[in-house]
Image (cartoon, rainbow, N blue to C red):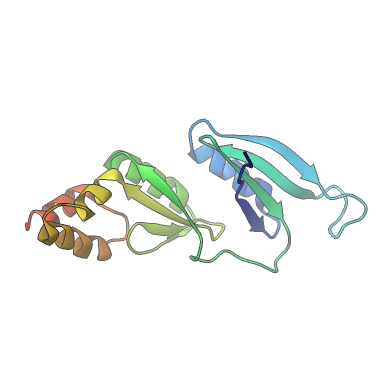
Length: 157
């Protein structure tokens, strides 16, 4: 079976970003670093790629230059068991970044993340469509998702 590895394009911060990401997620590590050689296009010895694993998922960071930047068209979703995990990942990934709506944020490198509690799926798929719509409306008004507030909204409080 072929393996799919997301590649993240950075200007020069690939190693710094990989080190940050592995500090945020459990069971994560950098597995390999490669460097530009004499052929360039960057100075020999400059970091080219960083292979790393985030909680079992492989990634590669490439220092490809300033030509491309991240957009919200691609984001990484963090499935959180509860509010405590939401709070942790929202805080860590958001350090030096920018909050967005509906559980989205951009980290300090411009990469978009969705930090989502398991309860959100349960609420949005509630068999009572009115409960689900109240939860959706509440979510649309939030930045960091608040499980208690989502449940209260679904209950009509």
